[in-house]
Length: 113
Picture 1 (tube, rainbow, N blue to C red):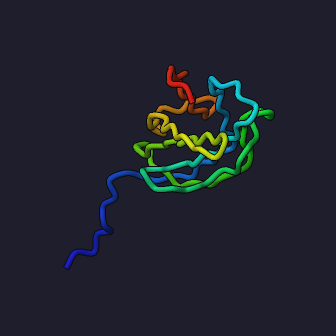
Picture 2: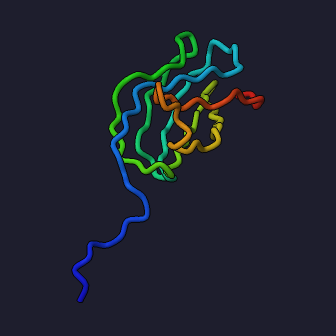
């Protein structure tokens, strides 16, 4: 019987998600937006609805235990006139975070909401 601890394939560390900001290409004042954050395809947070008249920025602290290989994905929901549309941003690896600021920035998308 071995007394060695089980090997972990990657070390996990604590990370904080502090802000989520989205700039959709949309000018419909009747829209509202919500978002969901997934880490490694698991839902970790549902962000509240924001009217389009306000900046699409969610602030707060969300503690996550992640490995450098963890994938962060954002799913944006746009609702207008009782109809919802969804946009899944491409996953970003935690290891792609800026070493100085810790920011993960997803490039602009040509898809309209």
